[in-house]
Image 1 (cartoon, rainbow, N blue to C red):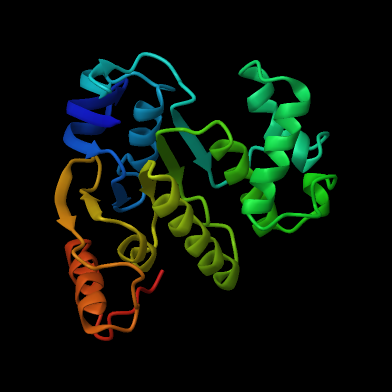
Image 2: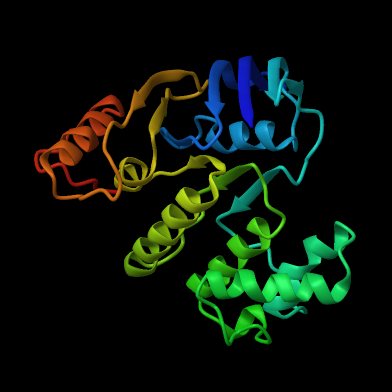
Length: 251
C-alpha cells in the first residue's frame, strides 16, 4: 500500500481550500493531521477517499490516480454512519454482502468483528439502543470488516466523552498494530495525535498547506507523562501558535 499526493490543491469557486499538498504515506504508517478550523483537513480526507477530485495536482493510491471511492480506502466520520433500521450485526455485514460474500458468512464475520471491538452480546441491538462509544466501535467494525489498506479518520472520537475517547484510542492503536493498515487521521486533539501517530502533519490556516511534517520517534505503548511526550506535544502546540506552559492541550 502506498499513498502519494503530488502538489494537490482544491478550489471551491474563488475559495482555495488546499494548496500544494505533497506527501507520501507508506504501508502501515499512521499520520495525524492537525490545523486550525477551516484549513481543509476534512477536504484532504475527501480527496484521498475519492469523494472529491483535486483541482490541481494528483492523489495516487498504489501508483494509480484516485478517481472514485474504493473499499481499500475506508473513511470513518465523527457522525457515525450506521443505518438505524439495522442491527449492529446487519450494519457490519452489509459491506461484506455488497462484496458478494454469502449472507451466512457475512453475518459470521460481522459477529467476529463486533467481538474484536468489544461488542459481543450486542449483535442484535439497534444503534439507538447503545451508547455513542459503542456505536463508534460498531462503525469501526463496519469499516474494518472489508479489510481496507488505508483507514481515513475524520475526528472519529470528537463527540465522545474523555474516558470513552481514551478507550477507543487504545482500541484503534491495538488494531493498527495488529492488522498493519495505514492511517490518515484528522484531529483537533494534539494529545491524541502525538499518542497515536508516527507523524503529525500540521496545516496552515486556509488555504491549507503543510507547515510541518513532524516525525514522532517514540515507541509504543506511549506514556503521556513522559518528558519526551510532553515536549513533542508542546512543539506541535507551538507550531499551531498555542503556547502551553504545562504541555497540556486546552481545546
